[in-house]
Image 1 (cartoon, helix red, strand yellow):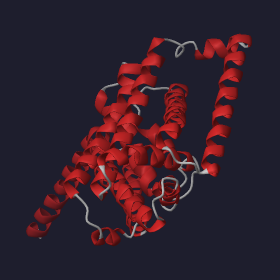
Image 2 (tube, rainbow, N blue to C red):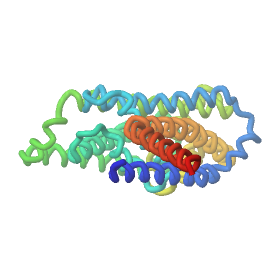
Image 3 (cartoon, rainbow, N blue to C red):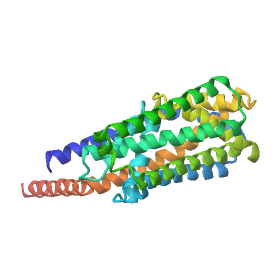
Image 4 (cartoon, rainbow, N blue to C red):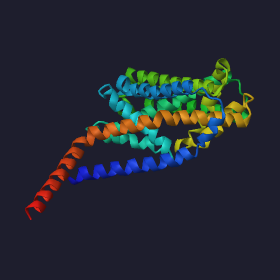
Length: 318
């Protein structure tokens, strides 16, 4: 077996071990046992899990029906799903960088970078659009969160204006980005935005599963979405453990929900995310190993088997 293949297999095993190790530690931080003291509709919780997982498939369409139509859907889902799963168990949003390893062979480093950075900006834009739109409908009046939203809004507008000016006055930059300044980028933004709307629906169903009324949960989901996603911009703990709970308490607190109830609801919503992303990420990771290294693993197994057979024959001969 070539040394390069052995190195890839070794790295794959190390990544798997690290993911499992951090998964155990991250899930302990959730204290999920507290959820069993609350009356929860686990059927609706499973629906929320399925919707959350489906949002990842929709997010993958930002590639296949957007900025990279040559990419197949399974590869796009692997890039999105494995990256999100890794973020749930590794700190500092490391999963965003790990996605680069799952792009098709033959993609240049520049192309991979573009295909990572551009959708990331689209994610940020989608979060801001939905969060800003959520504020008047959510009805919460937390001044710190409102101030953060307005600051981020003005920063986004200023950054967009600066970006347009740079493109207009820098022909080199315009030429560099010309490949992506087209209708496909607009379509990419549509699928990214749709995926975040589906995640918002998952949050709504999760709150209903916790026991909140259907109509009231709409406002609550908007508040939780805005608070948690803005706070999640801070790259810190695996799966934003602690930050997500704080954001949920902040969002629901603005609607008059007491902190104890809000904390329990946040644990359920966080558990839904883990239940959706970890199994999906593990499945996609194993499938990627089968696709890239399956033949190498098979050859290794056959080689070892042949060695064992020869060894047995030699012993019998002696």
